Image (cartoon, rainbow, N blue to C red):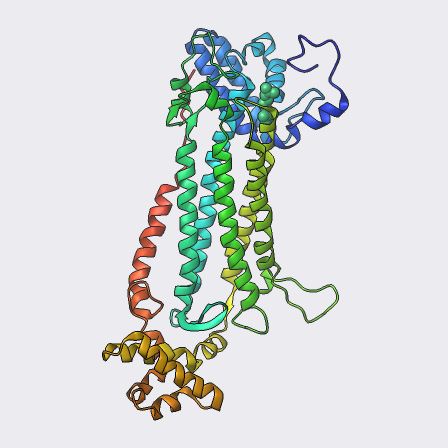
Length: 466
Ligand code: ARG
């Protein structure tokens, strides 16, 4: 028998049970559900709806149940529809009739919303920490050889040389924005739905502001109907994770290219590569391919939830139970990818000889000839045309560009741009890819890493003693 069986004369069909049970996945919420219940018990005691002794007893059994879950000894019973019902059923088993008072002035609708917010609040903190470690791994790799450089690409065509550290920092900045979004999402979700009841509040004298503050929420809900139907925080979290997934996917694709024989810019450690079941020589960058591939389901999870939410009438609808699996999945996949990529970057050897040879392609100096002309007063469009013609001549004739430039009247004075290191060193505008600009970028990046880290703080609830 379920805990809500009073008005029913026939038990639920097996098919509906299989369709609607959620314990099989929402058991992951046990700790946050119990935390919410422990705050609720204190609220009931304060409202005079539980005696002091009853509240202490309920709190005691809730702590026991949490221990059972943590130890893996919690026994699910046939009738446990979801984690909330399972905990209440067990509380009643342990505390006897007092357990039947636990759900006073509460619905699963405000309960599940509270539990899921508490869970997501912690999860956003955990993934932020992991992303910050990946940022560290990128910075460490750039620091390992801070003179190393490679071609920077547009349209995947060689464009201009860039320092390796500058290139890796580009990913780091994107990841830091992800962390910023996670922290913003966490601040926005930090509102307590507890006390909204099924949808309209209760006649009983509860104080949602008190339970909110004990649970570390910024404030209680302003509207009971919004409180139980709002899953914006799940959609926002999934959106932020999808965007992280897109960033990870781009990093993965780049590693696939870099570790191919065609590029050969980098190799991953044996501990971060896999072999082939048939071809003995293969060393595959599966870690990078999975970073790319996992983003598909992270984007899909966002789309799935938005589709569930679209068109739902106020307030709680059982459709909302479909919020959990995408959320859990995106968090799990993001964590797996971020952790593995951090390891992969730490295991990576950058083959600077190969990358630098590619970056020393003299055509990449064409822009420098044009910019020198500009410095001497030539309009840029004119300079572009002149240098373009020289490039055309060099390519068509199979002649080094340097020789064509040296032999062409308005350009001849600028042939020194083809000297080793000239092009990279001259990228010195703020935020540019050369060594002088990188120093300033490092200061900003360190400050941003520090700021991000200081924003990622675990919210610690403080339950009053009973
Ligand atoms: N397992 C349900 C969920 O995740 C709990 C809420 C059920 N509420 C209800 N009125 N049936 O949404």
